[in-house]
Image 1: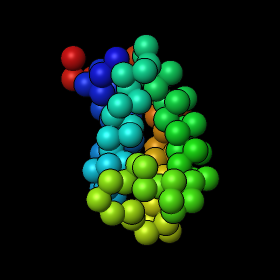
Image 2: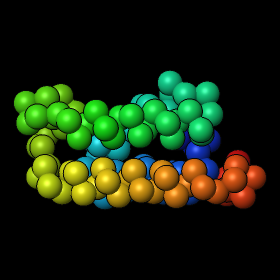
Image 3: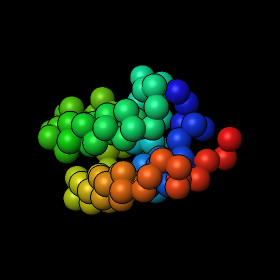
Length: 101
């Protein structure tokens, strides 16, 4: 799937929130969509990716952030916000989510 296939709620909660911190973080979650068949799978994998990123040390973060690594505190805050957004999206039935297609 592509990020264009995500509901507006999922897109805003993950992609837009990641972009607020750093474009390289957005890329990680954008590429993730290509490995998923549907939004539910994407949200599950996004939660797992958030957990993985939270565990990374500074040298490992350099593999995600090509130009500059954001402050770890700001990164963790953003990741927690994204996780909360995902949990909120998951409470919305699929037929009540909004799609652009």
